[in-house]
Image 1 (cartoon, rainbow, N blue to C red):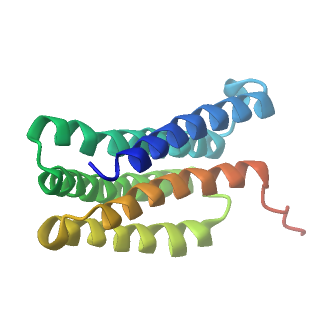
Image 2 (cartoon, rainbow, N blue to C red):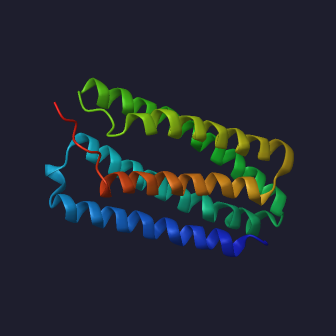
Length: 167
């Protein structure tokens, strides 16, 4: 498989990202029981996306060595990534509603509403198109990179908290 080194490198980056973000968050809070609901949801977001990007980086390799057909392995992986991205949008929409009802919405709601959801929708459509038309590695890698980008964006929200609103 031609993209094997790239997929393995993305899997390693995903593991490092999840581990580093978790350790950083634990040391910055000191105790996870003292973390707010938004911080816990943000950490869960990082871990979910890191584990998903690891899984979807390894999946085509496993399927390739099981099926010995690169296009079929990428096609199946793209279909599963499409379903995961749709499920991700649904679950994060539910988290958004629950946190907002509890009185603590996301730290930067405009980024969440106007970047995360639309771009995730477009990337999901790209993965679905890849399943139906191309079965190429490039569009599939865009989906994995978007999962990693989500984890890093959320991590940056932890590192650089929003400025306090003045009254």
